[in-house]
Length: 306
Image (cartoon, rainbow, N blue to C red; front, side, top):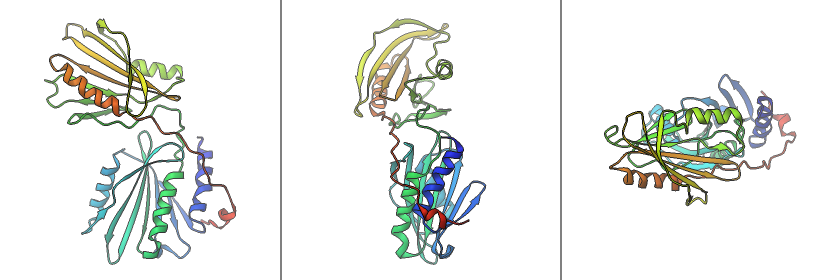
């Protein structure tokens, strides 16, 4: 989505969720305040924050930063935005002179996140602030476009350590490098790939540079519990004069994306690693679809002043 269209999208949605609220623009986002003033509470939206972390880690850091006794939080709720992006909602409960709720929404991009932060101490406003946070997180546009290289949900191999490399995550087992194995989760890619995308995949993902194949099995059909269907290939070979390495490559396809993961392993723990890889492959979830907005522009925007 172009930046101008993204701005129009957000500016059209915000006043309908928070009619008559005042807006103040900051270098990293926007502040929203009710007509009665900041004593009632407010909402702070911070765009494109880095580095990217899991929602649990972001919430834990914020609770430490608040440095208040007796804080608690709700379970983290995973949602999908109107644009089809991953997002999370959580509420922090506490007391600081008066009881308060801090409602948080996180919208996750490729290498950044947007944080929606709504807080109030007015007991009668608690349901309104929870609802506003949910609606802002659902409708807020980060403008990345749906058909792009993207991460997807899967269950990491238990006990293995993850090493992000761009949109790729490589997992190594306990005891690595003595236990020589890795599982790579590659980003989902649009079914219709550009030449630049094909080159990127060749260079950074499924390249065979320096790998001498000695065995290639025929592809076998696979299905997982999230109703994805695809194929799995198995090959073996060596890099120069190194040990025999086995490659298992699983590839799923839906109507929009390819989802690819790879196991590299060596005997004598090959079958153990294949069992672990099968659990990861079985957990891969298809990317969510964008959802049409039910909101329409109306004259409430005229009362939204800066």
